[in-house]
Every structure is written in C-alpha cells, then in structure tokens.
Amino acid sequence: MDDATALSQPRLRPAHSAALGASSLDEVIRFRQTPLGVGDVAWLQEQVDGGLQQLSDVAAAACHRFGWKRAHGGIPLAACSVMLRKLEERGLLQLPRAPQRHQEDTERTRLLDALGTVPGMVECQPEGPFTLRPIAPEERDGFRLHLQRYHYLGFKRSVGESMGYAAFVGQELVALLDWGAAVLRCHPRDEYVGWDDEIRVRHLPLVVGNRRFLILPWIRIPHLASRILGANLRRLSRDWQAAYGHPALLAETFVDVSRFEGTCYRAANWRRLGQTLGETRTCRDGTRPRGCPKDVYVYPLGRDALARLRAPEVA
Image (cartoon, rainbow, N blue to C red; front, top):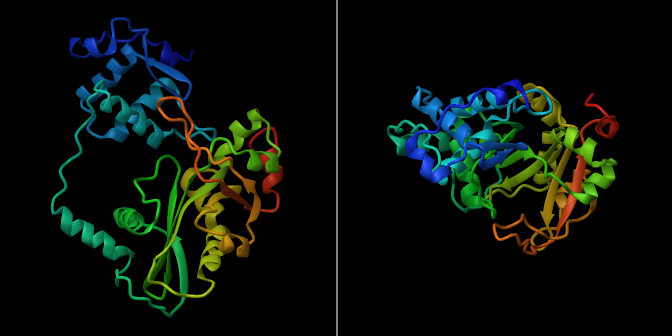
C-alpha cells in the first residue's frame, strides 16, 4: 500500500452511509487493481463538496491520492473519469455539474463547419492537394457527430489515450480516423509479437488501435483509403509521442469479415495475423455471447518496433 492509500480516511457522510454500507472496508468498486471502499468514496465526495468544479479535477485528485499512473508516467485521467461516472450512476457519488452551454445549436453548427461541409449523399470527386492532420480541440464535436451519423458502429467518445485525424482533398473533408488503446488480449497479435503476460502488460500502451475509419459516403476517389492509411501511419508514432510522451510502436485493427474484406489495409501493407474467436466482452450476467469473427491486422511503426516490444523493459 502506498503512502497516499495509507492516509487516514474521513468518516462517511450520513447521506451516503445507507447506499454504501456500514464498514469503511467494504469494496465499492475496483480501479487499476485498487479496491475502493466506503471511506474512499466519501473522500471523493468531500473533494467535490470542497470546491472542485470539473470532473477532470476530481479525477486528477483521485489519481494522485491513490498513485494511479500509466506505464509511462502519465495519469489515467480519462479512464478515471469513466470510473467516477459509474459511481455517480450507482448513486454513490455526486459529481460537479457541467456548466450550461449557451447557444448550443449554433456552436454545434460551427464545429461541424470546422470539419467541412456536408453535401448530402451526392457523389463527388473533390480535387486538390491531399492533407491529413490531427483534429483540433474545437473540432471534437464535429468529429463525433460525423462518426455517429455515418459510421456503421456509431461513436460515443474516446476514452484514455486517443487521437482523431481528418483527411482532406483540397478543402473537402473526405475521411476521419479514430485511434485509441489496444485491446487487452489478442492471441494472434500476442503470438506475433512474442509476448508473455508480464511483458504484454508493460508494453501494451505502445500498441494503438484503429477503432474507426470512415470515408464519407459521398466521396468516390480510387485508392483513397490505402493512401489515407499510409499517410496516417507515417506520422502516427511521432504524434503519439508529442501528445502522450511515448511512441506508438504497433498499429492494430479488427475487420468485420461479414462486412468487409480488408482490402485497403492489405493495400497499405498491413499484415493479417488470423481471426478472433468472435467473442464480445463479458456481459453483466457473466456470459460471453458469440459475435462475428474479425480479421486481425497489424502494422509495425518502425524497423525496430517488434524488438522494442519484446524487450523486458520499455525502451
């Protein structure tokens, strides 16, 4: 137990005692292998009541108190925020209220415009120079809304280390990509890298997943998808280094074989490793329903990427 965890814990406020139970040792939730008890949740509530007005501030305070850090030193701010929201959904914690947004419809329109016009379903072949760049902070709502509307999986929000990209031809937005944390376990990938469990856990933040790839449905340009992937892969590791203080060494993605053939990934020199078992995450009742198997593709981001991923320590 670290010094922060060993700090004496304040008494639970009466308003929460019935919901949480009588003993401060009762485990309420577990995050990053740390069991949080009644007293811990009471401490979180005291931070909110004491003046913290942003969810991110509460998450940062929790990370510092309990010593939660990523493998490369940063704090898991987004993941901790999700955990706090779960406590609120269970009625165990009251988080700060987000300030009311003024002129929300006007703001949403402006953010959509920042990513480009929406010409409808009329096919178009824009002309001009090709560019690909990370989305700007003011474009996040537009990014999310485009993916919600036009990607078959939809889109809610990115959690943890993540990065969105927008591709343009001339001034026309043509595609969006979302990158984020790799899956915890994937037998074809882990076998390809040569990981045991210990090294996998240590190096997993160096693997990033292509979670969404959307070419807007009215765009018709031959070979555009593989061109976008190639441009994105060339800059992905250095963008990750700039944003999170560590490189990305391996890109991974999963292709739904009931819908797609993975042609653009093969054309961009990704390597197909095999298929998943078609299982989804464990449901609340403990079952793991069968889904559609997915092809597993990877792309090493550098000549020494695999050697660095296999090394006992993070290079």
